[in-house]
Length: 122
Image (cartoon, rainbow, N blue to C red; front, side):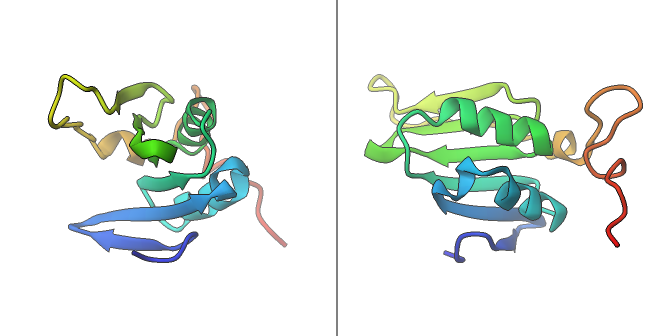
């Protein structure tokens, strides 16, 4: 497992890794997205992670897969919508489809883009 804040290529997909409270601040997730991550795997250190995970996914237009304390998990789409969560005691496994093309489109609203509309750094 790569260290928190790093991104790795897995089967043609760039996956960023966050650990603990790193996902609570916007900057680490933004840096991973700018490094090409389309999926962020976050081992969250807080129980009430849904709002934060949904925000990080939406503001960066990436998938967020969050593992919560106690073995619970959450999969969030680039729009901030929850795709699935668990565990469900009635299921042995859950399949979550991540159509990666959704994370390639960085448009927030007509005429705005989370990457292209960034001001140039001096």
